[in-house]
Amino acid sequence: MIPIILHHGLFGYDQISLGRLKISYFHRIDRALATTGHPLIISRVHPTGSIERRARELKQTILREIKRQNLAGQKMLLIAHSMGGLDARHMIQNLGMADHIAALLTICTPHHGSAYADWCIRHLGRRLGALRLFHQLGLDVQGILQLTPNTCRKFNEDVPNHPAVNYFSISAARPWHHIPPFAWFSHHLIRQAEGENDGLVSIRSAQWGTHLATWPADHWHTINKRFVLELKNPTGDITPRYLDAVQRITQHLREASTLEDRIKSPKLGI
Image (tube, rainbow, N blue to C red; front, top):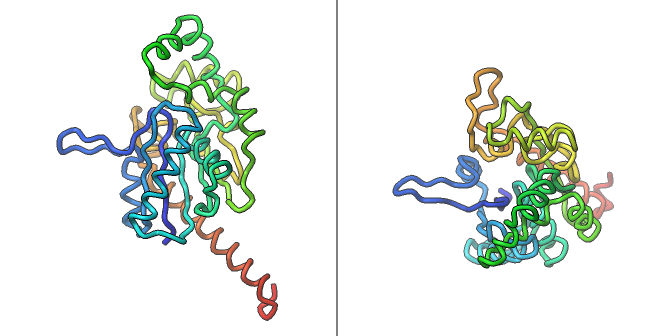
């Protein structure tokens, strides 16, 4: 089974322990992937640091776990949620990690930025002085500053896809009344600027490489954090959708590998 790396987004973590209760970022998803036989690497990087910082820490985690789990020589599937997808792209292209990654699947990643990030920086950062306060407190919040449409446009110019890696993406969207109340404002703001969205990231912004699907979920539901009671046409546990995406990608990789072998072997032909 292909090893899988799970990489968290902004304000993310690997696992939180509250006494005997353990809450993972990829709730139930990590356990389901491990149960199906995939060796797992779960990241833990700076929650609000820059893409560059988080990418370096992600690389260190992967290399350490390759050695610890004896995964040398195996190419992996990297699944990254939200901002984690930008970390992953930077790591693959700029930090020499393409040899370790067969495919990248991004879930609700703001590849083209978010209008809500623009609003937060303009109103909370500059007008209320939050960014200055964070700096004075020595807090690294560069990650928040790198999610605007302008900064992501520059990022995409500087970080093209690596030709040896397969890129896939999944977006999500729900009507405003089916997402948590704390995201109603951001949903409305993004919808006006970019169209349908999950409360933080629009469908348009989340599309990168081969777009596999748009899930009927909000941004938090895509990692099984559910804050809305679903009474009609519930999406429910998101885990089966992850398993389906992994199956589709691994099938694609197998077919691509078979085709490559046929091309290299004149006896088999194509």
